Length: 367
Ligand SMILES: Nc1ncnc2c1ncn2[C@@H]1O[C@H](COP(=O)(O)OP(=O)(O)OP(=O)(O)O)[C@@H](O)[C@H]1O
Ligand code: NI
Image 1 (cartoon, rainbow, N blue to C red):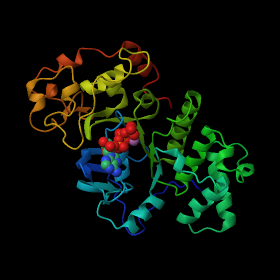
Image 2 (spheres, protein in one colour; image 1 turned 45 degrees about the horizontal axis):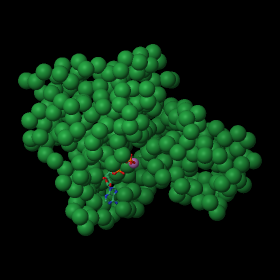
Image 3 (tube, rainbow, N blue to C red; image 1 turned 90 degrees about the vertical axis):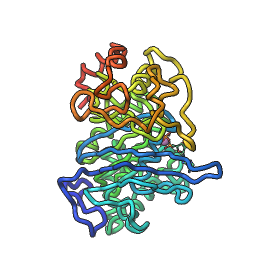
Image 4 (cartoon, protein in one colour; image 1 turned 135 degrees about the vertical axis):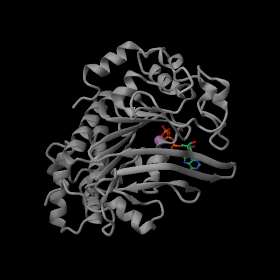
């Protein structure tokens, strides 16, 4: 029995797979939270797709709605106070926003693996690593104890844990941060997912280990032909892992496109500002200003109050509709890219050159 199957299971066991549809298709997703202070519009009209075998990164500052977007896919956020107010999520062409908790559980068990942002909760300190992964496997698959142990060793080996069979009886506290994260990845792979969601999987780790974990995720994604939805606030890591990028701000998508296009010609002023905050670039300590209050977001572009290029129309209407930048795949939500406007005002302030060189030198993605 192998943990690495090429064929895709149907998402719940009763749905059919539409091979022509993307693995994941999120359309106009709105996820809100009822609070005493009002409705928090954490995710407010987000659309994105992940194809089979593709890595898509969601980037944006803290509070932009990255985690809530990813937790909306199989509804892992707390309901109430949270709820999906509008939009749809389709996996293999099957709409899943209106599914029962039972069905969502099946989807989590067989189709979508999740590495959570807060790693502390992911492993239980009182059980051994082997026990926890075996549990995860047996929760999803009908296998004997012996088979489950075999699969556990296979998974731990796949995530790069040396002499895996001798680590089964280790407790989480006996592992280094990097090894712990590998075990967490193994747990997420226990259901042999078609889509893996990794929410800031490297932030708690030091730089060398971060690079190793990114490399591991890249390798696993390719080997298993999974879709990978990778979430980070750090545009720096995106070039190394993603095929496409979705830039989020205050619950909205500001820009999206192939990673090379977004790095070579960042088009939304927000994306440009994020790039300038990377280490070694112009702006130290982040973009000046703060995110708008998610309970009463301003009209117009949500970034307008912090934007260097703001015009009067930026404050009017809703978030500008997506305009193609160079080719249909690269799109930006900014009034400067409307047909009647002159986008060179924003575009011709070039990004820092060193970054552009770094990205193009390795084709945008190390593989
Ligand atoms: N349970 C909740 N109740 C009320 N508001 C919430 C809840 N969960 C999230 N939010 C709000 O939703 C918004 C988006 O949060 P989210 O965690 O998705 O941001 P993020 O982009 O993942 O940020 P970070 O980079 O810090 O992880 C924030 O304003 C947050 O305060
Ligand atoms: Ni988050």
